[in-house]
Length: 510
Image (cartoon, rainbow, N blue to C red; front, side, top):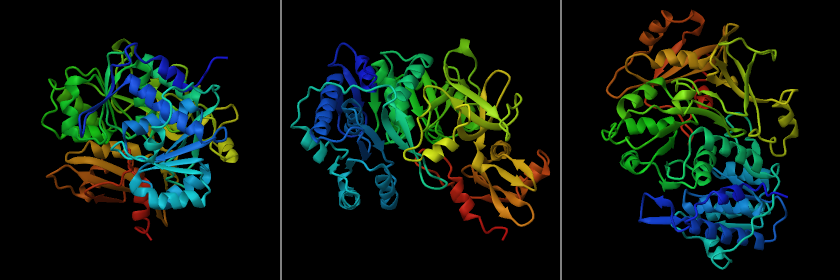
C-alpha cells in the first residue's frame, strides 16, 4: 500500500543535493541546517519516540520556543506515526493543565525554564515522559536523541490517520481540539504549492511562530514541499526582516507584522525588488495597510483565509491572469474546496448578501477531539462545516469576511456587523484601527460601542467620530459610545480579542 504519511511526501521533495542549505538562521549565531541535517535529525528524534514503546496514536505535546529543532520535533512525530500537539508559548499553567488533561499526551516537551511547573502538571496527569527543549539546541530531548540511529523508516499511515491536534483559541468556552489528518495537511499543502507558484529556487523568510496553522503548516509545509530554502527568524524584527528581502522571494506574515514594517524607512521598492510574493493572513488586513504596502513596496499583498479546523480555504489570485488581488477580500475558493454562504434558515444567500460561511473539502478536519456532540453540531446535514464566520461572496466569486457570528450585534432587533462599521471608522483621518463590539443595554438588548486607536501624533474625538458616522450609516449602527485608546488587546497571532473588550466595557450601560 502507498504510504500517506505527510513526512513521506515532504521528504520526496527534498533536493538531490542534500548538503544544500535548507534553513539559515537569521538571528543569533551564524547557523545553517542542510537537508541532510533535517533528514538525520528527524530520524534520531523519531527513533527516540519509537524507543519509548508508546501506544499507537499517542499524542506528543510541545510548548517550546521557536527553533529549528522544534520544527524537527514536529517532523519526527509525523514520521514516527504519532500525533503532534503544539501549544502556544503564551499559555499559562491553568490553560496547559486543561490541554494535558484533555489530550492525555504520552510525551510532553517544554522549555527548560518551565520544567518545574510543567512536569508537575504532566505527572499528575500520568504523562509518562517529560523532556526539555531550549532554543539554544540544549535540553534532555536532544541529549536522549543523540544516542539514536540517524536512519529511520517512515511509519506507514493512511490518509485519514490523525497527524495533529490543534486547539482553538477558546475565546468562548473551553478550547476544542481540531483533529487534522495526514490527508488534510498534504492536500492543502499541494494545492497551495500549485496555486502560489512554489519553486525549488524560492527562499521563504519564516518569521512566524510554529505553534499555529500559519507558521507550522502553511509556511513550513510550503517551503519543504518545494525543496526551498528558509531564512529562519526565531523572533520577528522588522528592520532585520526587510534587510533580508534581497535574499528571499516569499514572506508570510500577519497584518501586525506588515504594520511594523511600514514604520521602517528602509521599506522601499528597491528593497523588495527580488520578492515575488507577500502573503497575509490569520487576522483581517486593513485596506489602508494594503494600499500603503502597495505604495511603499511596489508589491501587492495576497490575502487568504483559513482556520485551525481547515487550514487554508480561499486565496486572492497569485497570477494576474487568474484575477486581481482585491484589498478587503480573502479571494476565491481554493481548487477542490467548497465555500458557500447561507442565511439563518440554511438557505443560499443572494450574491453580495451577508450570511454564514460553510465549507467542505479534503482539507476539512475530522472533528473535535473527544467532543462528538460538538462535532455533529458544527456540521450541516449535508456535510458542510460551519466556520462560525460571517461574510459575503460577490459576483466574481471573491469572498469578504465580515466577522465572527459570535461578534454579531443585535441592537433593537437589527443585525449589526462590526466589520462594516470598522470599515467606515478606519477610513477617517487620523484613525489607525478600530474595533466594534456589542454591550448589554436595557433598551436595545445590545448597544454598539467603538474602540478606536489614533495614529501617532493625532488627537481624535469620540463624539466627532459618532457624528460623522451618523451621516454615513443607519442610525441603529452608529456607536452609542466611542472610546479613544492607545492599543487593542490581541492574541499572539495579532487578532483583536473582542471577548476581552466586551468584558472590559460590560457595565457601561448598566
